[in-house]
Amino acid sequence: MMDKPFNNKAWLMVLPVVLLVAFSAVIPLMTVVNYSVQDTFGNNQFFWAGLEWYAELISSARFQDALVRQFVFTAIILSIEIPLGIFIALHMPKRGIGASISLVLMALPLLIPWNVVGTIWQIFGRVDIGLLGATMDAIGVDYNYTQNIFDAWLTIIVMDVWHWTSLVALLCYAGLQSIPDAYFQAAKIDGASRWAVFRYIELPKMHRVLLIAFLLRFMDSFMIYTEPFVVTGGGPGNSTTLLSLDLVKMAIGQFDLGPAAAFSIIYFLIILLLSWVFYTAMTNYDKGEAK
Amino acid sequence: MPATATTASPALKKSRAISINTSAAVMASYLVFLLLPIYWLLNMSLKNNEEILSTFSLWPQNLTFANYITIFTDASWYSGYINSITYVGMNTVLSVSVALPAAYAFSRYRFLGDKHLFFWLLTNRMAPPAVFALPFFQLYSSVGLFDTHIAVALAHTLFNVPLAVWILEGFMSGVPKEIDETAYIDGYSFPKFFGKIFMPLIASGVGVAAFFCFMFSWVELLLARTLTSVAAKPIAATMTRTVSASGVDWGVLAAAGILTIIPGALVIWFVRNHIAKGFALGRV
Image 1 (tube, one colour):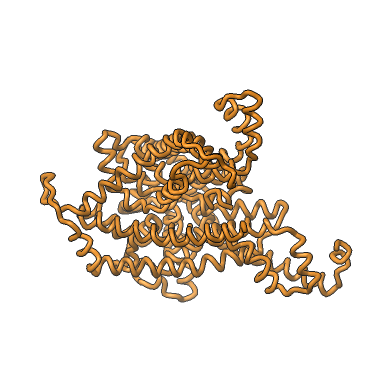
Image 2 (cartoon, helix red, strand yellow):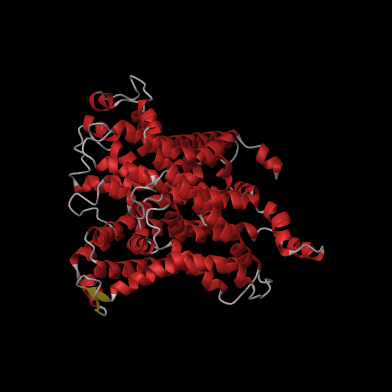
């Protein structure tokens, strides 16, 4: 890795990507920054507002509530999906046709358009026509995700677990596959317990993929929009209005450009900051391993 | 060592049999959990609305393909699929073709700011689409691209180009540098080397990158819906508008949902061994 030659002509090969991403990311982001520091009274007249929108937004109960909901949601799904994903990966068939079929079936939810994921669960949970809703009704559980806050949360959490646990499991499985058989044979000769095999052989080998899984699940759950939008629409009330749902409502529903832009910047910075922390942890780990 | 492994005691054999059975049970229940909601959608798509709303049954009592026929004969439905496939295809070609040279540069050279650039690309994967919805709408409206396929294709490069660069870089770094050097010594020019020698070596990487660009563009709705109204409306948006209307046509909705799952289900078999690498942006 270290013997790569230094050559600034390589910039020419990177240039198309830089130009394209600049067009599709930098220009829109500049627009957002621009709106976030200005106020308008219509007629395309803008006035300098400085950091007013930021101050107003951060102190608003609406934003704080959405932020708290978002952190709670992300914390819950991470604490379910990561352990469950590891558990599933440990039980996947190692080779043969069983392994192939498991891989394909497990990946299926990952490839379904996000609004269809929402539609599937919207239907599945309905008391009148859905299997889950009807079963709950039949066994006497009062379940209604459009009226009851707890049921709404339960539905979007189970939906997310259904949608993304396979991602964690597939990554862990890839990590487990890289462990040579000799390690397990050696452990068997030493009479190592199942727990010891997991703790000292499997877990260390999964360290890297787990960081990736954690990073991806953190980022994507923090940006989730379409699935809860289809199932609960942010309701009942505002109880499942996560950050993206709130932002879209503000920007496109109410057209509050200034606050929405300040919202966008703060939102992006939170993800960027936390992801950077995870990413640094990941690359530091790689360096540690290379030594 | 093999001798020790083969002469396992009966007790050990028994414990292994139990552990295999537990694994099978865990996998079976997980797969049932995954497939049940999808099965329910399929079940609904093969019933008519009357049956869906009146009788509750685990499989269709009067099997009908009427919902699928509706979709294939009604232009407002099938044009949604054509629109989606058009912009997804454009996006895939665009993303992979600009990512190829960039990934080669990242995997073979060091240059001014390379590490920062690589991370900056990843930050675009971290950007919530909700942040970009409004500025994209204004940007593409102002250049006259609103409601065109190319607008959605360009918007999706936001997360697909970084994805393609990362995946391809991962695969390219697995090809030894000596191959490049030997080719240059043999007098190959760069384009000839890249097309004739290098591309076949990373063919599976290109396939995986293309698959993931296709997939992430296919599953995204927020940007696609914001940037289109009629002419380029994606199938996903057609579906949400049916949901919000009063008196939902559940059967057709379910059939439309099933049809959106098929493209992924068809191609996944070919990339099954690389799927973890793709989801990890080439980092496994």
